[in-house]
Image 1: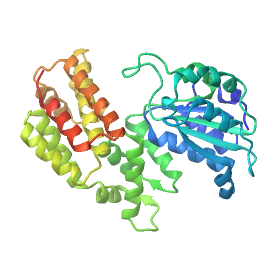
Image 2 (image 1 turned 90 degrees about the horizontal axis):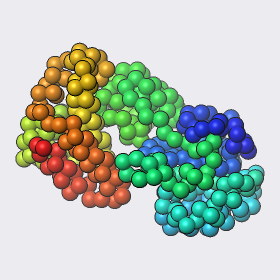
Image 3 (image 1 turned 90 degrees about the vertical axis):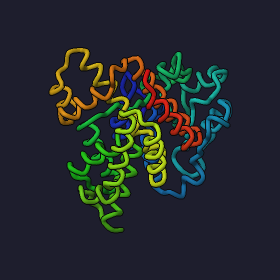
Length: 348
């Protein structure tokens, strides 16, 4: 297994971490955190493939724990258990952010000297850094060496399109530039949602199809979804609550709630960003080039804000994040989204 130093001195870029794993250099301890479900799934899959070339070994030497149920002592004990048939044992802890802080004293010694016959993979489905939802860094960041911490990289626009094309290759799929552009434009910037849509688009071309072009994307994402999202955003801009709620009901009849919240969050974030840039002196043409939208669309968006303050838009963006967290925590999708749409329609 690779020593921690090979990962670098600071938090590790996910791409660098996955490349390290692909070369067979698996560190004995890694903490992967951030609101990127695709990243945590990819890391777990990559480490599993590297440690268990024979999948049969995974049945005995791979243990998946849930931080909401397991104690730190249980995690350490599992990591200290010797492998049965493979060269190393894998202990993965999902939702590791739920591990109690009182366990930091027990975990500290292990983090300094991990078992040489185990790989402990800590997976958090939210950021452990201090931020809008956390007053201070999670205790794990103070115990796990920074060289073993993997954090997601925010991608937008062309960078996200290129990442999507590269990620699709792991599934033996080829995505054209135009298809990637359509997916990012229509689906948003949630990596897990994008990968899911790529897989569905590939199936639209037949069970043996491995190429995803614009035709496959349109067949799956479809003009119906684009029309529905357009109708919902226009209703929100006009603050027509009745129409917005009817449109929301129509979307939820065919679309996943997480996709709908991703679309709403993107629209609110775009409005907030456009307003900040405009007040900072950016011209409409400059903003249009950055966002890759027609200048007329930027003018219409600014006009629809009706003088709404950046503070109000920031509050609405935070509400979108809160609803996203609620949906991920098994909140009732239709009720949560209906309340959010009502709040987004309100003027402040």
